[in-house]
Image 1 (spheres, rainbow, N blue to C red):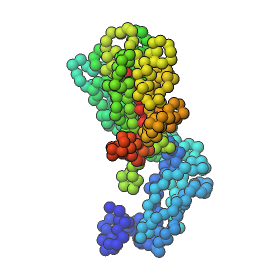
Image 2 (image 1 turned 45 degrees about the vertical axis):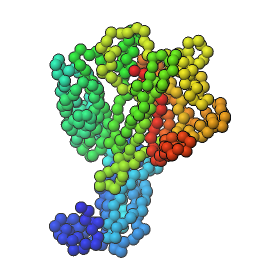
Image 3 (image 1 turned 90 degrees about the horizontal axis):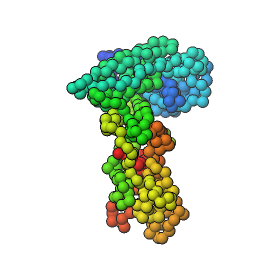
Image 4 (image 1 turned 180 degrees about the vertical axis):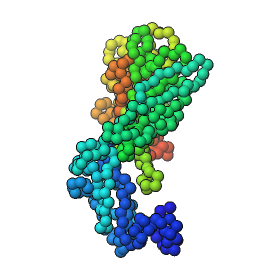
Length: 462
């Protein structure tokens, strides 16, 4: 319960003050006396912002144009000022994150209503302005592990080791592990794991409250007799023998959530495209990124857009890849979709799907293996189709208006040895879901504020 917000129940307010002593301490034994308390000041290195949380009480009568001034406590340099929005009783709360032009301060002073308070900046760099700051600790989640299940067992107990984490100018006060299952927050937690690839993230906190950057450790648990992990099964094939390609590390951030879905594909492929197949090797991925809110802070979660972050995809390892257990097979053959049998620059994929593309598809679009079909922007699709119906075809017609985008496999640049992350080709603030595309039959809709990244047509093969 926030006593400062019980503004009209005067009797109840003073009874709570007597019982808890909160008003007597925080408001200096007078509901009208000015007061200020800094809850936290933190340097957010990832976003390069200074976060300040404070609360206080203004003198009566309450001024509606009051400001809180934040400055470098050691150099007196002004950092920024924020307008306060006090309650009727003069109480106010402040939470703000700001980029600052000057160097990161070691300590800040917050002033409002004629009173001020000073606090050290948590997570300030060692070369902070005005003195010596706290150097953040360094997390070390230990070396990646590969273990096998005991014969006849479905789980195995594994010890994670964060004991090599250290703080250059202090000591480690706490360990924060995340993963599935969620480990205990100790230096060396034990986790019970089933077969599969498991990823755990460690952040450590020093004796001044600064958090380290996250460090990750992967644990591969294989069935008894398994030979290892493959990201690209043919890396174990005799035709293209080589070391299995590793997956990119998962980096979880406590302030964000990534929501991803594959809403079309997986089954859409064929070995032979000399005859028509209902779909090409076609997979559709969508992703949304949520900036989390904070309980009790009044900050709501929000969907981020492409001005905030970039989203990429890459391949993940598969400990159950049959190529790891079965003998090598020659030759490697998955599809002839990109095969140009007669050397005329028109491969089988182009010949199969060009008639369905309203004149939008060019032979060069399909020239590179592991590159998907071009996909139009749904919001622009109605104009593309209208141009086609009006007889405006060719490269300067609907093709130029459709916002065509192609997706590729992460290993396209160097098959068998590469797993380079690929950006989602398009960001959709709104989606034209077949709206007005079927002769005004009332089907479909224009969906606004979707804010999702789209990777349409990733040509994933089995």
